[in-house]
Amino acid sequence: AEEATDAYEHARQRIADLLGAQPRELVFTKNATEAINLVSYSFTNATAKAQHGAPLPSGSERFILAPGDEIVVTEMEHHANLVPWQEVCDKTGAVLRWIGVTEDGRLDLDHPEHGLGVITGRTKVVALTHQSNVLGTVTPVQQVADAAHAVGAVVVLDACQSVPHMPVDVRTLGVDYVAFSGHKMLGPSGIGVLWGRYDLLESMPPL
Image: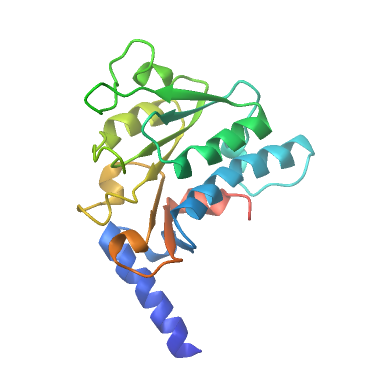
C-alpha cells in the first residue's frame, strides 16, 4: 500500500513539474471530459445549494449563477468543452455566448459582435481550447484570459491537444483551470488531469 501511494504521488509530482504547477493543485480524473464536468458541476451544485439555503464552502460564491449570467465559449470547442456548459445554462438560467472563428480558423477576437466584446460584466465563465483538435489552431489564451479576469470571470482551458505537443506552463497561461488526458500523450486510457488554482479547488462544492 505504501509503495502504491508513493508511485501515485510520484506521478502527481511529475505532472506538476511538466506544467509548472504544485502537486496539490492536480486532480486525477478518468479523462479530460470528466475534468471539465468536475468544474462545470461546481456551478450547478453551488447554484442549487444557494437557492435552497444550503451551506457552501467559503469562497464558493463565485460559482453561484443567476438567470442572465453568461458563459462564453468559442465556436471551435470540442463537445467536451461545450456540452457541460450548455447543461449548466439549462439548469441555472445562465446564457451561452460565443466567440466566433475567422475563415482561416482563428478566433475572431476583433469582431464587433462575436469577438472579445462578448465578455462583459455578466460573464462568469470563459471556456476555450488551447489548440483546436480539428484545425490545429493555437489560441491566444492570455489575451482571452486577461479580458475574462478583468470582469471577474473564471477561465477553463481545454489543453488536450497542447500539453502533448508544446511546453505548457499554467502560470504563464494565466487561466484558472486546465484539463487534459493521458491517452493523447501516449499514456494509458482512463486517466485525465484537472489542474486548478488551489484557492478555487478549495472553494468548489464537493462532488
